[in-house]
Amino acid sequence: MSDTLLRPFRWSDVPAITTIYRHYVDHTAITFDTEAPDETAIAEKYAGLKRLGHPVIIAERLGKTVGYAYASFYRPRAAYRFTCEDSLYLDPAETGRGLGKAMLTELLAQSRAFGFKQMLAVITADTANSVAIHEKFGFRRVGYYEAVGLKFDRWHDIVHLQLAL
Image 1 (cartoon, helix red, strand yellow):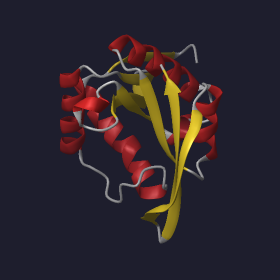
Image 2: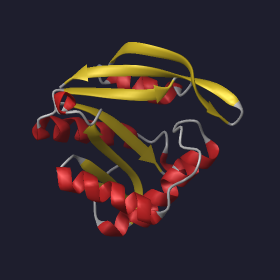
Image 3: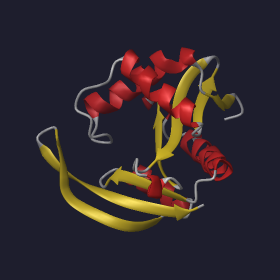
């Protein structure tokens, strides 16, 4: 991990973020998107995150973007403004090396500094590693929804986890 830099988002990260996310859309139920957004859509999303000042972290190794994480409003209504939802994605070749832990550590710190008071994680229930890493950080299970997402001809459950920041 010593060769990995956690840094703020740059516009030059858009192609790598698009590629990383496309893998998860096309091959997993980690996201319920069924069509991968293009670079224009990703750029628009990140423009919104930057405009809001929300935490966005890029993991870079040897000049290559290998992961990203962000926290943004859980819901758009004003009463939710202190509650965020996290998202964290790694290049598939980077999983299992501790990068997710490092990124979540930094995301939690930046989310607290931003002023978020609660963080929610909405995770496909059969994604044991995502659930486990959140629980290691003290997230607790607060909800479970059965068969709410249909992807790859299979119904998927989701679990909601929460951490007071």
